[in-house]
Image 1 (spheres, rainbow, N blue to C red):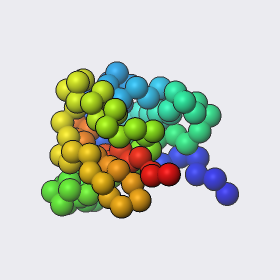
Image 2: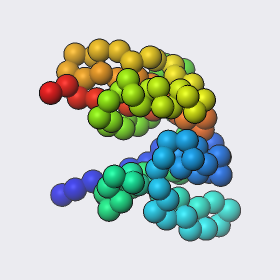
Image 3: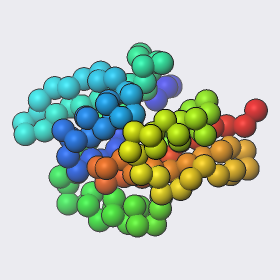
Image 4: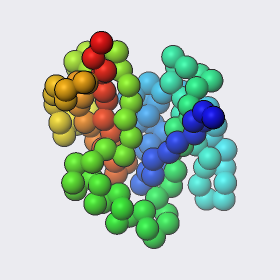
Length: 129
């Protein structure tokens, strides 16, 4: 069994599409209209056949309170592995990404957390050797 797809709920799919591709550097895998929304998935350019990230609309009534509570409590909705948290932090900060947690040693990993501009906090993590 393998993970093929996971997702985050986003407030605005067009804004999310732009942020996740233009700022973070992900690549669109699927961008298909489904009613008023899209089946919008992203993949890492380093692993184009790997796990897809679904940028899912936040329309369901349960999503708003759930997302707000996670965000308010500083809990990331997703985690992305990086080779070098410090370098990735600098790259993203230089692109205007707002970090809510600067890089910190978390024991077995180094991590930082940023605001994806779409209602989520996202962690970047570098596992220690």
